[in-house]
Image (cartoon, rainbow, N blue to C red; front, side, top):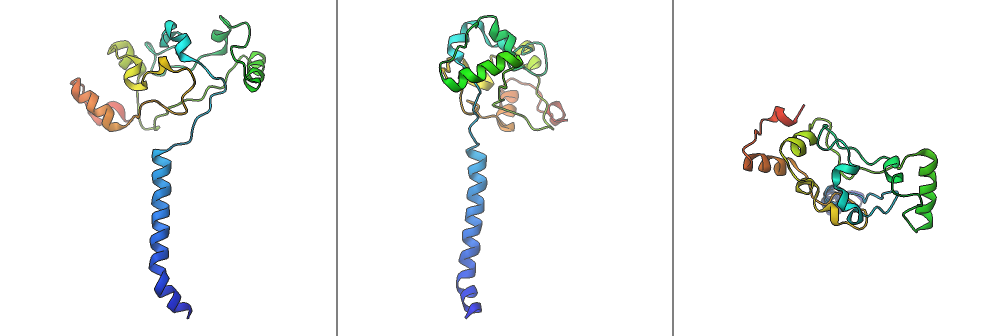
Length: 170
């Protein structure tokens, strides 16, 4: 009887396991986990300062920085938040002089991207790759625009920039 059950239901069990595995992979790839920032930063209120004020190095370095707490303290003597948990976090930030911002996008280790080349030299607007972050009133749970090799290569082709693999991959 045991062999009969395996013969009858075995292929269906294998098929179900395969469908579940593929569904899991698709879910992880297309629906990455949300990123929770420590403070409900309102980009729209700060838009007048421009991206480069808080994200130093955008025009001059390979990597743009996440804002340092002392920059926030230049304007905010009091916590700019009202949620009790965020006020508590703000107090810890005052003590440590650091806010643990989370990156919305990271690149694979084998990929090289220079903000200086794209923003400083090519005059690309930040929104080209990052989307309209300046209008966001709350931190988005993930990057506003997807990033892929195809998107980069299409842009390079359109702008007549090299698509040689060694230009971006180390």
